[in-house]
Length: 402
Image (cartoon, rainbow, N blue to C red; front, side, top):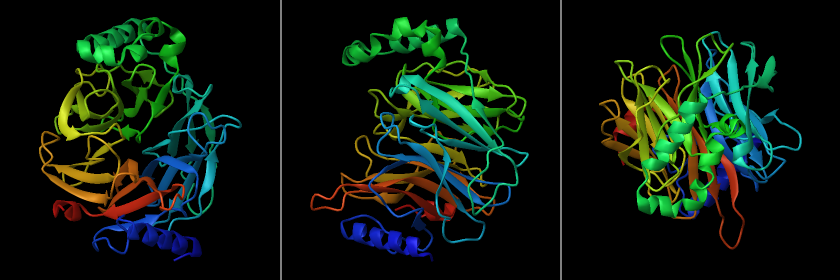
């Protein structure tokens, strides 16, 4: 164990005395480790993936804030195959004097790793400019990644269909909801027909996926209209088209899982009045979507991710609350998302703590890996510190339940 890892574990022990679950108190099947020593910065929106060589790569953004802080950069770290400690972190993207946020990874079949992220142009989420970078297959621990190409990913929604999706989403709200969100909804009509607002503001949250057909999907959302859509590539990322927007105000940050019959299911964070994880399905590999509906799973307005496991079960990592982010759980479904009868907690603490914005993937050896923002105040007026936590566990650990 490295000196920095030892310090991180020591900090977690102190936090545990205040009520947090720690690595030493966790069941043997669950292993948790901080990627770096907690600090008084905002470390957030991580994404973790396994490279073709079997190494784990995690990315996140770090700075003194979010969209309003110009020092926000994208950082990364490696967990080499077979290792029990993460490499020292390194900066992997920065637009000087602009915030770079929400990185998402895609491991391509040819061994290349793609990273997508938005640069915020004017300190508003509406101004997000979507970018990407590609690393060749030689990239591996321990050092920084050399990106072989980097560019802007231009999105061009169908204007008429997009305007209709925005209008339909507003029409589905109740009178009470339209009153509650009146200030937010007021500019929708003008903005929906404005090409600049249609084409800017799109951000990733979870990793991109490669479908059996070879199609690539990058799930995207925008805070401008609280809607989601897919960026689609049928030529291994050479060109991209834009799928149709979902209909359902507040359904953002989609995570996509494929059913056995080919139907795609998108699960959404709720950014509106529902306080439920929301859902829509696609019969045509992400081009069009059914109207968004509520699931039975609670959501406090926080990020989620759903994946299909090797066993065929689906796993969902989420804050299983309607308010607060102090409980982070993994739930399992054996009927392709219809029900989620098994839940086990990775983190559970008192209100005030935050374990949120999780990313989750299953490695080739069957181990499930999750990363998430881990933020605790240490009491006595001490400011919060944060790190990116890494947890690994088998499916059997989740099936034991709490």
